[in-house]
Image (tube, rainbow, N blue to C red):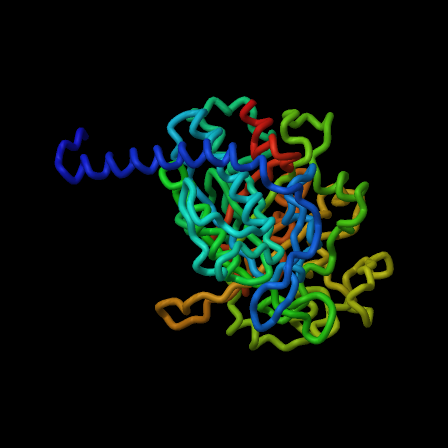
Length: 423
């Protein structure tokens, strides 16, 4: 409907202003990026606070984006925000401007700086005491299947396995907390840095990017040592690929040339995010021994059922009937160690916990922002299909999330997110 009311004219004017501001900011960002120092893993000056701790900086320019294997999950960045957006850019040029702006803001936010007193674009340092504190911040950008519809002429360039997440048998998905054109994964040492980064992105992309859903998470400290625990009380993320082994990462996480994917995807990876509610009040009624058989590990130590240390690898060759580690336990279904499942049993987990307001019935609302990366999305889907048979489904309920493709890394100051996709 053609709205000629004063309110309608005001909304159009406001939208036009937002787009003009975005485009001016995008042009200024391209000019400003030249003076940014080369990113490297280093220690920043001590933050002017009572703690005086040095803040880590993880290289922004690399073949792969940070926030996946750099730093190794999960303890180095105990706070995370997963923010999904709908892209409202009007055309391919505005979409390119959006990715250029996101790249510039990520460079600045992850490297740390003192913002200029004046200059183009929004200016905000109120949370961080006059300077942008890197605090180990990583910004990981990924795109959803919906970005490859007819709006921007990208349908023929979609990663071959990227699709909209469909509900599994026991999912209770809330449409308001699913999918998205773009996902930004923000991870850092403290939540104020994440809030600042999130607000910065919103300010610099107003008019071309609309928030869809957000999930905030945290990593518990080791109790007493080793891998942190999830909200069920079990150690989470023990079985992960060795992020320091380049060959293993290339085989299991990073998209490689010659695999049938579009050329621009090389160096990227598929990301699955699942917001999973835990029914901890019911779980706590289950005897610990039964909990251990459901998970497949000892609760206190994190060790396999027959072991004493979490570092021990589960081995099932002497337990074909599941007398020690049940065949339908979580870890055994995830990786049954059979020839038939060998190709669909390795993912890189990078998950966080959440606590939300209890529901109207007064039931506790806590859970898990499950996040994993893999070279092929079908690997995760096959694993999750196996897990539909686990007894744990009685105590959990996936409610949101989505599938995304993490863009290859930004190589240098002339590069930007999605450059290969948009070329």
